[in-house]
Length: 410
Ligand SMILES: C[S@@+](CC[C@H](N)C(=O)[O-])C[C@H]1O[C@@H](n2cnc3c(N)ncnc32)[C@H](O)[C@@H]1O
Image 1 (spheres, rainbow, N blue to C red):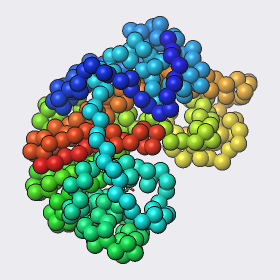
Image 2 (image 1 turned 180 degrees about the horizontal axis):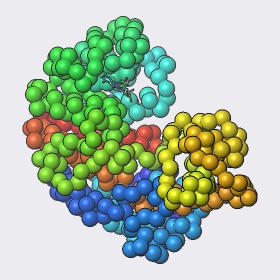
Image 3 (image 1 turned 30 degrees about the vertical axis):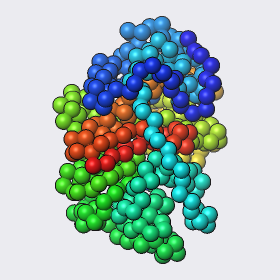
Image 4 (image 1 turned 90 degrees about the vertical axis):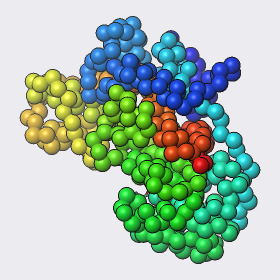
């Protein structure tokens, strides 16, 4: 069933003969796919011993459950390569027009000092997607951190306003803007508060790189009351919202029967492309231990039910599986029973981890469609506000998994 994984990072097969769909049609196609195939993605392999779709696809289920952890890791970023039959379900809807890249404006080399390499590459890629005639703007950098992106765009002569609520970042940003003589203001301000509106209205071009959940949708909503001319927004952390469910922005989005809660909104965030090998090994070990403990606690309690442990449990300083399990049992107030062979119990956790990760490949097929659904909802909303909109990837996924950019011009 599998196929060799030739590329580094996620890379969709090229569709040479078909043009990308208009956004409303693309949204409708994804909406239907996600609704009809819901059992395939709306599940929790880690906590559910059996998934509802497994009865409908017994061969696929048995095949996935027999694969190794290495298999799951190999195909994690490109699950359609391992699941070719199912993969064809969604590939038709995975194409976007590539964004035009413009030559980079040269900057003093020293301006990049102190900015982590990966962050700077993201900023450069983001900046290279903005048409040169955007120069001369009154820029707003929304949830700006130290304002590196805004300064990159405004230097040397444009004005800039960086909205940020972390006082330390605000102070550092101010100091850098003074050093590089950029006419920038750095208001210390909650982007979700009323006060932010004054800053928003003084700018004609808004950029936001990785503003989470409510922060990016809040900025987009401001377009309906402000006379902003241009926008470039790369959203992230869709699940960081105050409401229980995603509140669609566009008419089509609001009419959709797809209601996404915070857990479901976390699905597009599940692929790890930036973790190092050591980090992956450590995370796998704690996940295998959690699953090994899960099997034991079901026996100890006589209840066949997952028992959540708090996330700090992943950082408990126990070097062995038995010690960690006994600490987990004490934390949950469970009376442990004697374990005849701890090695076997630990091994069972690793085996279950391999099964979980392989079953997650099916869910993984829907990460990007769900993310596209969200971004297309935002794109359609901007079109309703009179913007001409482009949605595309501003950098490879290996640089940041949140690599989708909305470009809009009134
Ligand atoms: C993921 S960081 C991105 C920072 C910057 N745009 C970049 O790409 O380097 C998100 C930023 O949003 C800021 N932030 C979070 N909540 C905020 C709020 N309510 N108002 C203003 N800024 C906020 C955080 O302090 C952080 O600097």
